[in-house]
Image (cartoon, rainbow, N blue to C red; front, side, top):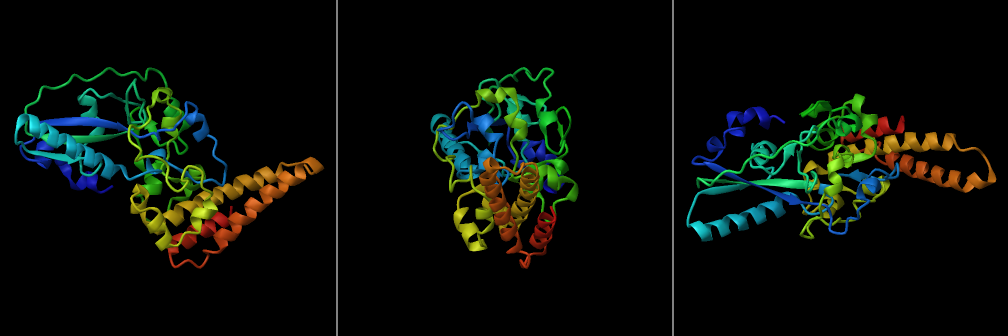
Length: 326
């Protein structure tokens, strides 16, 4: 996250980032898949131990491409109305303080988890901006509606929300599984569970997300079964397969090594949970079939992990060894 320091005041002075900027047009775009049912939050809380949990936003097409293209179309429509003007579009692609700008533009308020919230759509949306040199009228900010609720803070697996509106990114599972290069700190591995790319927990437990809206486009529909894939299956992909399957996905940018690293942690945690479940099963005729099923899932995880004990990557080998030790 060195960009936060390296870009200095450009992060909070848009006119330094794009000279001539006098206004920012801030937009949001819902990303829940179109066929999402009303019980989606409860379903997302109950993934099997050996199923890979991938943040909802990343299961479909790369949002950078989708939103940037639509922002470009909007910018061109504005030009057709007002004539030539100077602009530049952004979506999580430069040192732009998106949430702060969206809050000032009246799109919502910053929740205690630091994400933007709106009473009409919760927080399950992307943000984008168009920096322009047109002195447009400004919109008033909206009021805050978190009240005394601390659900997001209490449910965070790694306690990354250290105070209301303050997140320690070094503890956040989204940072650990996406942005962090190298080894995942030991102190957080068990808490990561089976979350192999990002984490939605603070949003799943936020009461306002009962109002989250499905996307108006089909770009964010789930690809390759990423909402219910077994980790053993995903762990079997070689690099060529990973790059092919993740073509056009935001996940592709973490690369195959970090993909395997994250899966190894998830598989180790699944092993620990399944072995605990097996130990608590009393031996009886009724339980024999269930015990056999659990044991086969344990065997599949262990065999998959052992297959990469000699992986060329030191990072992968280290995380595989940790996983097997669980």
